[in-house]
Amino acid sequence: MKNLSKSIFLMAFSIVTLSQGQVVEDFQPSSANQPGREYPKVNSERRVRVQISAPDANYVQLDIGAVKYDLVKDENGVWTGESAPQDEGFHYYQLNIDGASVPDPGSLYFYGAGRWGSGVEIPAHDQEFYALKNVPHGQVREHIYFSEIDNAMRRCFVYTPPCYELKPEKRYPVLYLQHGGGENETGWSAQGKANLIMDNLIAEGKAKPFIIVMDNGTWRMPERSRPADGGERPRGPWPPTGWADGFMNILTKDIIPMIDANYRTIANQQNRAMAGLSMGAMQTRVITLANSDIFSHVGMFSGGSISIEDIENNPDFMNNVNLLFISFGSTEVESGRYNMGTDPALNVEELKKRGLNAHYYVSPGTAHEWQTWRRSLYQFAPLLFQE
Image 1 (tube, rainbow, N blue to C red):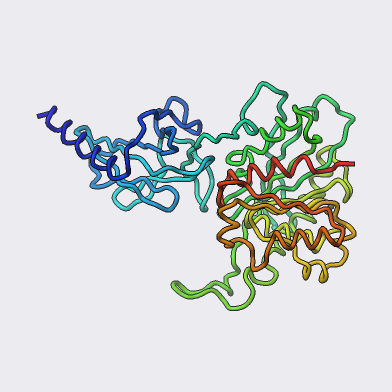
Image 2: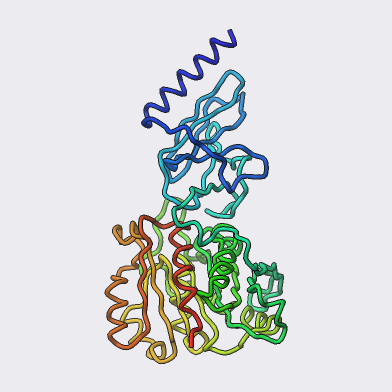
């Protein structure tokens, strides 16, 4: 009977496999797994295979890339299945067990989509630039502080370069680097591997050492502006006017003074940068346009661009800013979804004609995802704080 049950499981698993196309059986554990966990696995086709014991469940699915894939149950109550090929890089995912979305106990947990959940790494052809290597490494410090503006305790993470501890007399420029919507201050070091990207760039002599500050810029719509359940969002510009003011005040009045007081920074506009991805890019646009006397280097990844109209409304930006960097994934460029109503490539060209040091980068073969943003930081960092 046991052999018969196993045969039925293998037959069902084969049917699912065939429906997805022939699967190459060279799966290896993901680098984002919890120690000693075999699943999730990834194969050379970039498929993700998961497995979980849930003997009392009626159905289990793998939910990744906004698609759900049915898993197959064996005679021991173990469910197994895999996805279609995924893009290279990091992906959030979850398991759906009888309608409940839960993290996979096999993976490490990452904060995204407003919760702690599972993540998987699809090996990328260019992953060397964020690989953990035998080079000097900086530190990522958890810094807890009180915000006068927020009237609350807050937390940021601060990357200090490898030479920070070795040269106590040296001071450093600072990049304020923001996450996207649904993520938090852990994103750039955990999912983005910003510290490893910088360690490798510095070791290769491709970037100047600088400090990176990663804080929580999560924005919530004011209660008075929130639509009722099922209703439409308020009419008018989106995001609404003033949406970034809260974090702008915390950044300029709490975070920057706190960092300058506690770290060996070069505390002036020429040695201060701001960048972000998606929502963080949108915040960067609003904050740096309004505060070009504070920031001299600006990076926006997958979240619009600076237009001629923006410059005309904020004329000091052209005179104060030394560098503007705009980037997208190639799939984002094709969809135009994150352009924010303008043409980023055209905006960059127009600003270059007016004399601004502006750069435009497109990550090949990626969408609105961490591989786009890792590559963007890799391209952006060497341009910062140059003579």
